[in-house]
Length: 380
Image 1: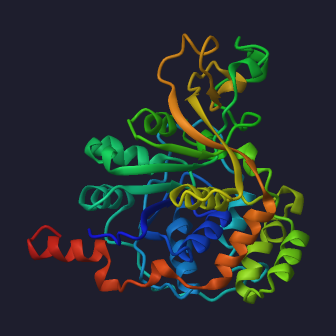
Image 2: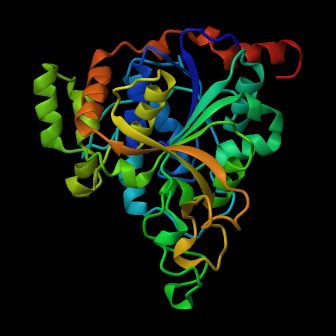
Image 3: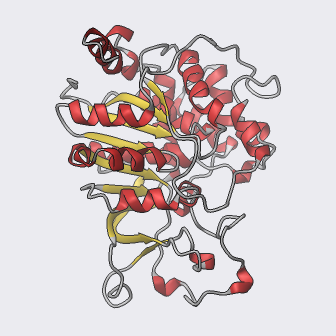
């Protein structure tokens, strides 16, 4: 698979939540990014039958039909914590594009996913790419962990893994590490306070990816994402300041999550698209990006069923606090942000409608060429 030397090849692994759609639309319009595949995981914030379908429909609505391979992936986590996303939330996400009570869009039902499933496609792209490929993980790490387990030779071909979510706290932040039976026992039907959904929904996958030997791990922690509220007033003020007008579809796409999900506007943040923007900032070594402060940490995700409130939590320590802990992974994390800089960059890109990653033809997609090759050799 040849890749443009002036652009960064990226695999987006997503659970197809609405903020994932924001991230995808942003990245399609970034000239330095080449989205080589979008793989979906059904163990997060979408129902499996909708995850791939909604990504395909969304690309079609953006006039990016058939240009980016979309592969359907795992539907069950490597190890369930017992926690499940509410069906009420999932219904709002699954029908966001088409519901008459939400965006009310007509979509092309004939759009087809890649002939390869997600884990296959991740492996093939990494094995046959001429240079390392970055991975942006916007959901549970189930697909990525499974791909690494199936073929560990792909690990050196992963340039940087960018993770949306996670939590990174010191051991000293916890008043007690002694299990407290009154707090509940495994399985956990509710998420532990402060932990990240993308981790908590498949902690074992996160541990396997952390410990796989990927050279560069970067995270946009969930608590830092909460520095970036998706405030409608701020959006309108910034649009006026930038003197740009979004299309009705795009404007509704980024402003309707509270309404369509029966949530308060104060509950909505720029979650996964902040991870996408952090990736672009680091890839291009931008000195004045929205992430104003970064930190190097060592992290470990707690897997013990007796950990009570610590289950699924990321801890970061070095020195005396973590001296007895083995298997800590090195992460670069964003710790401080500027919401105005973030919003200006995000709105400018989604308004531009350049669709850089949609410029290849269907016949020239890597997965289609590979499938033709396999079939010509009787292997398809």
